[in-house]
Length: 340
Image (cartoon, rainbow, N blue to C red; front, side, top):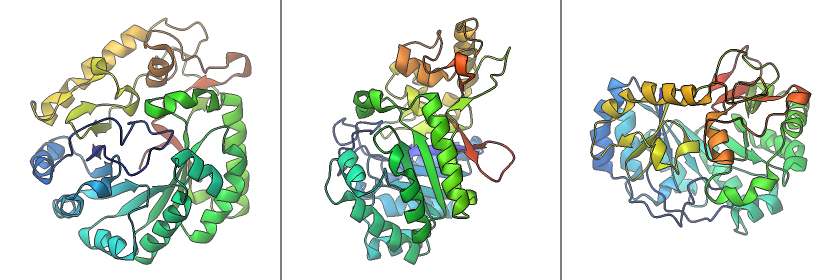
């Protein structure tokens, strides 16, 4: 099981597609002492990996201590960053603290990336951060959010990252939550996403780097008839204000908040999840007339404001139906992976 540990919502960027509205939406910063108090609860839930996220995690002054403690306590720690604050010295410090992997976003080539991040020079800073981390022997995974704005830059971006030597390149669907709500018209249809997948496979295959590619599983061509799609129960999101969710797609909703770690032990909070998921399933039974059994509950909630209806992205006339976005195609493997 993985915990997404959102240690701050402070950020030095105002990315147009930020799901947490980081830098604008206030949340208290998660302290080192709070993280220490959570690790016994992590073990009760058989957590083996902690994904530190934000905001920009490097704006939490206790970040290095948090990484060091979690690593010494037996957890594999990875971290997401925009790269602006990573220089040669910082990369070495992260390595010494025990960071096992860093995720840095590149959402297109320079002009597109800088535009989406609303900061001139953010692309160059991210690329420099990638090089510093690779030099420090920290494996680097690059994340790319694909939309109509940048889908024509996928092939040259794959080639560029192949030359840089990143260990993985992951592609994500534009999620209409937070600031990204304003970009909903840029989100790809399933037919468009299918063409993007084919492009990624072709380009990565030509460069002999298919084994380094992960693509979010946005649709399926044969829906599981008779099986209402539920949410996965192997990923826990803890926001820096202590709120706990089972999926980031519900993280703006108090109705789907599972609890708060400042008032209730995490293991007790997580015990309520099966009943919550069962309720979602019951609400979705017979909710759809497209034979897709409702599609992704989270995306349905974001796009329709409720879960007891059909995911509007489904294209039954083309045999394309929604799937849980917490699944990923990892090419060269026989089955879908969860986010790793």
